Length: 438
Image 1 (cartoon, rainbow, N blue to C red):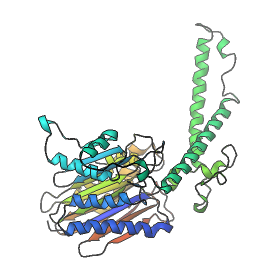
Image 2: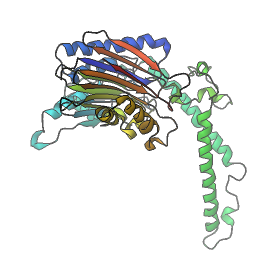
Image 3: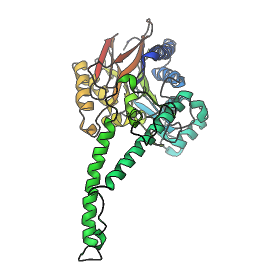
Image 4: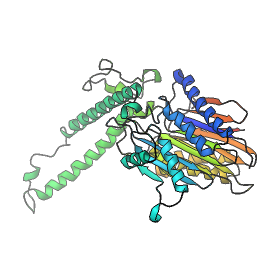
């Protein structure tokens, strides 16, 4: 195969403010140009993917490496993975702390697997998490840093704003439940335990009353979730502001908490970054890196760690076969349940009409997937590079408000752009699909 050297990357699907659009495009172009420089000098696709993602991790604009979202306890835990298409080798790290560039750990895991078994026939790992991942990274010469080096003023401000809003929401829900439980028929009558029964004092009637009480509570829980999810839905985009200080944030006991109760996902910043490349030997590679969702539970891992969910790469095995490299972005739980990266790759390798196949994929196997029926909105996207003979095609799609991508082909300048949902399209419920032939 003699396809042109190509680098294609994104800084995540989510929400990209128009005020920072130039900065997003700038960091995308910088990473793309560096990847192409390596490719022109004979570097492998996986080296170029790792370098592009490393630059994105070093930028405080992205939710990866420096500037990652903070966990519920204010710590930084990152996920990353890399896959190369010649041997289908995959390496990943999850919930790793103290490492500025998690993609380098994933890349090292790929390299170690290719070296074969360890002493006494032990199988080398392909996926490491937490403290074990950090310790292993140190043994491989990958530097470890402090939390302060990975945290920015912006991420701290976001953490404090989000934490305050969650506390306000929890307080409001607690007060509503207390109110429901202490009025009307939603409390256990005082004489319930003294009612007559066949067993010990009040046993039969007590459990009857308790069962009814729990049923009413479950109904209230459903109503609470619906009410909380609709709080402030009448606010337009300009009035959906984070509270930056106590004066701007109404007291959580007041009736004006709506402005602080908007779902965090409605103003989510860009998510998982990713890159895909094809090198001078026709080898393909893909990689992703993410700081995870804001206020995630410590120890939570996302799609950037999971085989088939975060990234996928496969070289063509014959002259008529299609080589693919895919990187996904969005809410990890949604991508993991649908294995979006692998599904996307299979469409590109098998569909007679790839555009129609990808449309059906996003419509039926992502937004319409039975695996995601428990979610009212599904946030996800992908970028994909497919190569067949001398033809190279790009595709990207997202169900989030926006996505920032950049592509560079040998002999051409890097081109960055941000695509957005239309004015009549609803994020989490609809999607856009774009394609380009190089």
